[in-house]
Image (cartoon, rainbow, N blue to C red; front, side, top):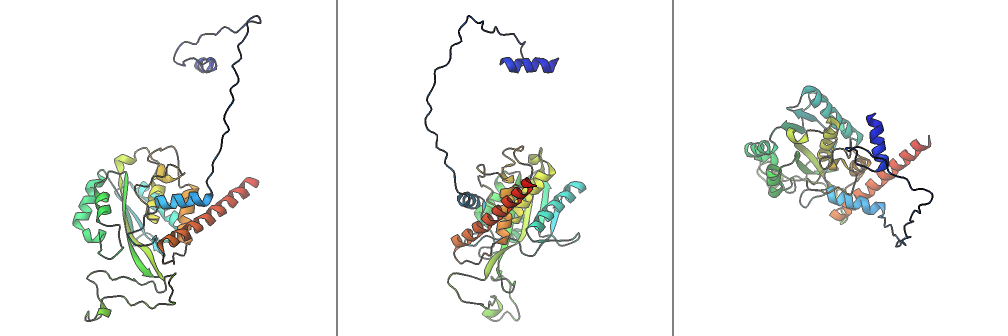
Length: 323
């Protein structure tokens, strides 16, 4: 009965909360006034090329360390989750590890030494300030371009966010895998000459356009304010954490123009998991060579890689639709 009343209310255009009333239909002798025709202006639809969209998304979300190129993990990653229920922690760790494997990383086995730690707390700001106060050197190692700087570190501590993150990266000799920069206070051998303090890099081929020095993420901490993520599914949370952990993501990025898991806190029903944009961004980042000296050229290289991944995903969708 209630369904019938609601249906009638909708049909007649009345308020569903009020008692529906019948409307008098016009008789044959009554003339129905036709609305006057209105001439519409021409409508112009302006589209943006896919390359421009990809470049816009990449420029918006990517936040490399100062004066450095985009960094990514290299080789393996070991994920740990702290202060969550056992089943939730296991799901988050497994989900982040699976996404890492999808981009070519090797996920650590249980018992590995964590280099990506996810910590849940009821006061993210207080925990961030405590950690920085007690172990500041872990957040700012002192090497050039290894972190986002003191202004960003203050933002990490003081800005209220459901999820906050901090990453350390290291310039690496891509030919040997060794560190390309010295960490303050470190030396080797007798610590008696400049060669004992600074890494020695054998240049495979001199070039003004290309470099063998790349930037790798070496450590990351993600703090989840548990009260502020209420309403999210565990998959939404895990996928959000995966994206901001596997790439250098600007915490202030405005991605409302794109379909991305980064929008989940603005509209929790808008996205359930990593979108094709997010996956293409990660795959593009991890497939790119990153060997250009010019930072803008490095970004162009990543954009091209993302575009190829978009094309691959589109072909896969077309093949699925045709089956």
